[in-house]
Length: 280
Image (cartoon, rainbow, N blue to C red; front, side, top):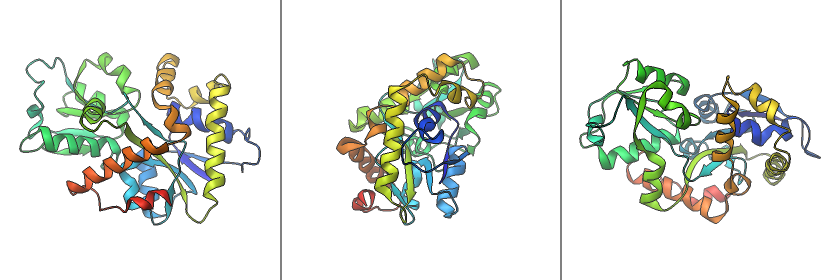
């Protein structure tokens, strides 16, 4: 079975057991390691593998071919994207600083960017200026070097941005949680509707549970793909993004996804979505 997910520690931690044939009855995996922008595009084009990790923000455009699985993804609290600027934020802490500015984002169909647009609609009168899409690992150096005015960052950048001389203008996760009371939907696991979705969800959940039961087993695999990340940072990454919602979205998880899409649809950022489609 072909699957695509990122080389980030949370994904490799979650899928290690399945990728290494440690889940009884699960098919052998042919893994494509790809940035979320790539997997979003593959899913939208209908040319992707049977199972993919995509941004929740990309989900409304792929539900005809793919179904949302209730496990394996990233949704939680205290783990949202950050908007970063160069140097101290004193004098720039007002979000209106972004009016007319150049802002880099990791994907124009990422959950991070969707949250940023929802936040900016409330907090940046007149709107930001030019939006530039670039791989997320290039964003902080670009802000540091003055190539852009601000950057929207995700993943382990939460822990490493001070080393680039950057400061946080806003934590979009904190804003979202305080504004909605729900956790943040970030990355979704989807599978082709033509497949046995219940079985795939079971294998994915078993892989999550194996990872928790044997955390040392995946360590070499995680670090092999962690792009020279410090092991402590990799563990922080896992602790932040792999949680109860990874094993089962549950009522509160699905409710958070529904809230995200309802708000985004009100702003005209995603098409209107039949909530029942998420449960099919």
